[in-house]
Image (cartoon, rainbow, N blue to C red; front, side):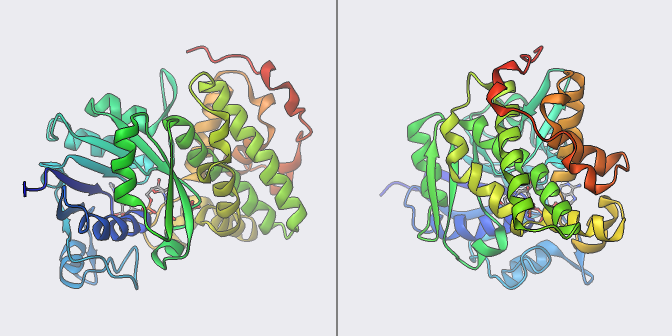
Length: 359
Ligand SMILES: NC(=O)C1=CN([C@@H]2O[C@H](COP(=O)(O)OP(=O)(O)OC[C@H]3O[C@@H](n4cnc5c(N)ncnc54)[C@H](O)[C@@H]3O)[C@@H](O)[C@H]2O)C=CC1
Ligand SMILES: O=C(CO)COP(=O)(O)O
């Protein structure tokens, strides 16, 4: 039998990164063409005076970001990202989006030219060229094919092996089969689509809607109000994604796990929702709440609200996105939370009237 020709590296070890390591570690052990070892890059820090990498390798548990769940023994924590990616054919990138650029600069020139990557990140980038997705940023930096994975996937529930679905966006059907084999389990059901950036836009933009849902909970309003915010938020997400990249996005992607299902789960169970509720109840700024309540975990929706607004404002199209605009103004411009309802009676049948992006 020939030796395994493929090898996995996971870049990122937070709540979702550690959960992904649990899944992928167990799966590679059963795949003959993959080396059993999974290199797991950990942003090094001290936990009770010990290095987190040492704790993970001794106890097979990420006691800070995924306490109470064992990682497979073949997942090896490493503090050096360049060492972790060295021989990897399949690179899984799962870090908060604000840290991506620095990580890419670190691993640039250190990866196999034949490697491929998949992004599990939920976030967007803003540059002179407008709004970019994580796979576009990774592809430009590393010049390798990049797929996306996103879904209604609250990490703690998946670590408890509660059934859910996810969506992989991958243009090459053969590659899609390989990525699916790394992630699919009886309790984590993967569906593959060819729409890489549609999957990503859904995952990133729903975090802003979840902040809005948290405001509703903070105001003590009920389920009907939250359902209205979810519905309008979903339409604005779709409207913005189609405005930016309509020619390459499939409408059907919005009905996959990465679309409607993820908006629902995050608006009820996510960190963005929870901290937005505290924001209304306490009046404390989001970054302070993140430091006080998340024990090192990071919010994506608050930053994404700012990034989305900078884009729609620069395009002069805020009128077409009243909910996303209101959420931004509540987060960053001291507008009171009840102003979330201002101007929400937009006619979504007029989507074609949003001016095209000047890209
Ligand atoms: N937690 C969840 O339920 C889910 C998260 N995601 C997405 O996955 C991505 C990663 O999130 P999580 O794994 O949950 O992370 P997390 O928010 O739980 O943890 C933060 C991570 O950032 C690392 N970090 C801190 N400073 C850093 C730096 N300067 N450079 C690099 N890394 C640094 C920490 O070591 C830690 O691993 C995010 O885009 C998130 O939206 C997607 C689906 C579910
Ligand atoms: O993306 C998520 C669930 O699919 C997690 O959302 P939060 O970051 O709000 O917890």
